[in-house]
Length: 425
Ligand code: ADP
View (cartoon, rainbow, N blue to C red):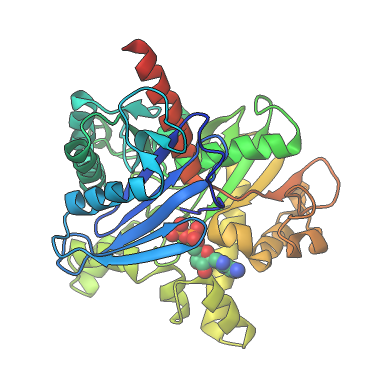
């Protein structure tokens, strides 16, 4: 997640603050922020969760950082400790009622949940039935959903009165038509096992599409966008009138573009071929495609785009090839996404590579002139910061940079749904 907020105190008393949690298989990232402004009060991360070496780093804005060892190491221990820090930051986790002077109120906890299957088309207030449904989707994301649930259950155990919201990476793409989400495989694979394209990074796409429309000064309804979320994981979404109509990731976050360590698309025949020729088992193939491929596999240097760019600039041939394959596949996929839109109004770059690599953006735009795209080199070098995000010359098709903030989107959903839940009580 990209955190862009600054110090918070002073502006957080209007609607309360939200605890945003991203509980992964061995880490917990968190932030406490004001949903209206995006300003942070606390943020941090616990590493090696589930082991006696668990370490929790907490930043109290603007610049007070503490590091603690948590030998107990469970999600519950980590989350209790995060909640313990709230009073020190001038916060109280209250059930209801107005905040006291000088004390901001925590109105809820919002959780990133990776897979919502076909059940979840939007964020929801957590209750027993929602927990059961997330658990029922766990086979679709066996590493992620159980960890996300552990975070939800840990908050529940520590603060049973605090309302919680689940925000799904997949939900935004549930608007895709069957022609975009179905694979051409035996029908039973879909009906019995749920093998279809779900797509990911949905929270980022929702945030960035709203921001892009605001920056373009046009309503989302009527806009046709291709958004490139290029972080450690990379994907594209075609967004038409504010809804997703196509995306490059599929059943899992392995499909589509070249990524840091993930292959993206390969010939599915590679499985049988390598099982036969190299004697590799399914889990070894899976592991290689997830962790030893992408920029890392091609370059042999790094999974990190900065390092690959630097090595390519110094003449490293494999790093050059990695960059070349990354850009070729990205440009090709962007052109493919436009078929679901019939017209392109803007190509939007976001996440670590999208927001920071003028090189990648420039090379992609150079390949997509036939779509009406072009680079304004000065604006691109400045990442669109002086031009309202725009990195293309004036013209009907805009290229732009829009920084994502998934934590803020989760905080906003949480504030909205917990307020609605409170009214229903
Ligand atoms: P995550 O998907 O884990 O949230 P990020 O969105 O932070 O990751 O993106 C990480 C990627 O962004 C890495 O490949 C990193 O090298 C790349 N990146 C960050 N800054 C730059 C930069 N200045 N130039 C090129 N790539 C960058």
